Image (cartoon, rainbow, N blue to C red; front, side, top):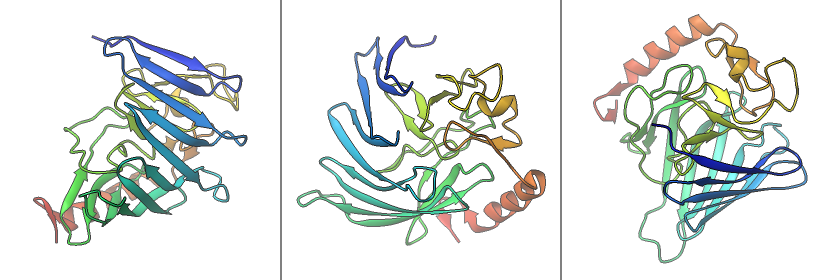
Length: 230
């Protein structure tokens, strides 16, 4: 059964708070004047962000999580996260670590491995974002699951910058700010096999999708074995 949730939006149609009416848990989002997310509060954990304004995708270059530490991220292929470095706060027992991502054609992190090649996180979804296998969320940044979206476990939705995305319905939770179609809630114009929508505003067409997927899949299978990178 679907869990009931309540959402509050600001004047720019950005979701600023969401409450799980069954558990009582809440996630709150704060945006700056450029409509980029700069803060999230969930279960008393506060995360602050420094977005990438130059790239135009508002990717989180720096994420500081209260009580844990700081993540500095590097991106490739326009918007996919390629690697990140975690630096713990003083007194935190979690060690500093570098993480490297193996993304699929849609930007989803199929695997995340440490510097020694040990897999720390895996996620496998269909083209609508429904998980095929259980996600192994380990450590900071484990909310990275489908495309470049960050998963919100409180609301059970994906944060798509301009809007939230519900993979069960295959719909965005807000209308398209660009207003390109009559149906403003459709994800990638109902064509997720050939498009992605990294900002929640404009879907990008995947060039050479079939060939790229075949090459990417073969490459992924060749370098991953069991729970360790070869």
